[in-house]
Image (spheres, helix red, strand yellow):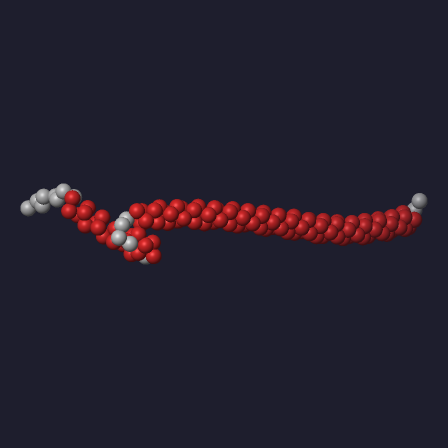
Length: 143
């Protein structure tokens, strides 16, 4: 092989290497593009999954609050009804006792007290305060 043939062979080999390098670069660019697409697709899926997970969590928390508020409302209504019933029963008992006492008092006072119970209560309180003030021992003032 002479120099000219050697140069042509080297030139062909260089062209072949250039062609192979260009093919490798092109394949690398294609693979890099696919990798970028895969990363983008995976990121989109992860973002969608995270969004769905957060929405589900918020929905479950909202449902929990609604259930808790419903339970609290039912409990409050039940307690209010019980208190109303107990207060009504207590007032009926008090009224019955007041009527008994008023009926025992002579001179028609019982009828007046039963017609005006709040006036009788106010007078009773005033008399109680007056007696309490009279019977309470006085303190000595220092000075």
